[in-house]
Length: 150
Figure 1 (cartoon, helix red, strand yellow):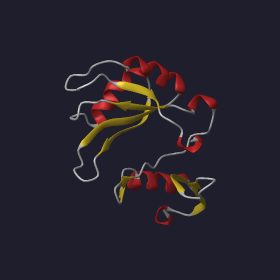
Figure 2: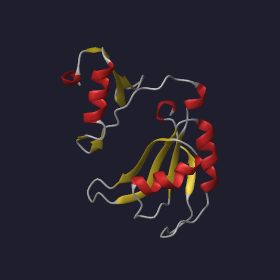
Figure 3: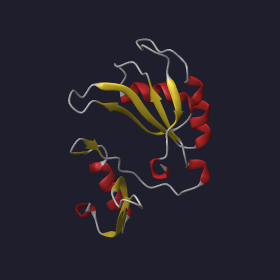
């Protein structure tokens, strides 16, 4: 990230017990322009079989915690955009990611949808049990488990 501007600090978040990375971190740039350049160029970039999500960090508060939903039994033809459109009626979506098979790159019928605030995610739980066209089974929609608390 240094190519985008001077960095004040950088931190990789790790599991306290194993010290293994949890797959995310924070970079604080000296200027807003450096941060904007990093977001513009690196958001969505691939590293190995992962895609980066690069954005401005949000200030932690109780209302933005546990806002991510786990969704399964999606029709195999649904894209990130289709899933986001389905859930957008309940609030602002921060991130929507449909999981894909590593080898075939085909949809696995599973997605994670992160809302701006928990109350929006809670509203979206009404989709649990609905049967979407092209799906073999009714949707399962529930709050995603917090990996840091396992």
